[in-house]
Image (cartoon, rainbow, N blue to C red; front, side, top):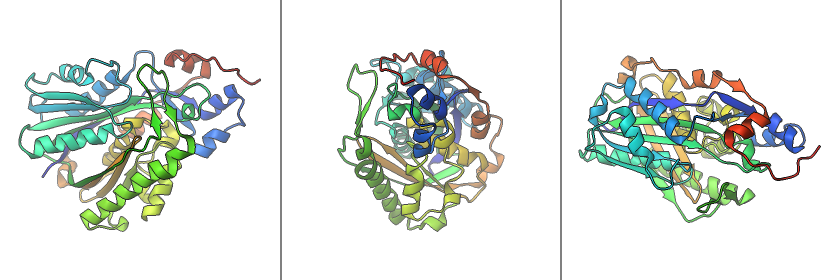
Length: 350
């Protein structure tokens, strides 16, 4: 049995509402936020970046894990906002956790699905017996140019999962991926903000990959949507995942717990993994979880997960995802621009 033995989450306290962003740019009040189904988003503080978020999430996972840091044989950090272009985040996480130096570590990048790719890599390492446990992290402090549609949703957060074969709280029964060369979103070296293909990011990108991968997982697992208690999809906004879930045959109630984008925005590599954390916070033995991530460029990873009896004795000492969402401090656009180091050059409408 290969699966999740522990997990941790981190969401910055600061929030900015889409109403406040719209006020600055002269948009019709809440028009953009309503169209995306995002009310507010998380904002990293001046002392928060992908590395600090990754460390905090991983520390939570190890603090309540039955497997100590000396069992870690692999650490993979998925993100598109690594602090260094040349210097791994994974080695910093390893040092912060006190992991032994005899381990494999690497930074992953595949837009918003780098974290799910890290889980798959850990599954392979653990399942083959090469390592006892592995840490997979999805973390981002995502970027959105001032006044761009991305600015209304691009947020920050991290989730970490310890993968192993003993004391598994959630077994990963099946996983499958669907990948093509679809350039819906990109950022070249040295560019401050990413570029996106607007509406092209929908049907040929997000929906094609998410639906194809999700349908393939159902076929591989021999299941139907009704067999699952929870469903979690990558959430670039609050609209796309609900539509994708409906197309695959899932009910809104199955998606409620893991749908976080309307309250904290799109945490990119952390998005689907934070949704999974929220589900594990309340899941009971026997619960079935359907997870499908997505990353621009483009690809999807899907997982069939079953919660085990072990979750009944799992430590609940760390704050839940709901606790992290509720612990919020709302800031204005000026403070947000200062914290994010934004350079506003466009003309602001009165």
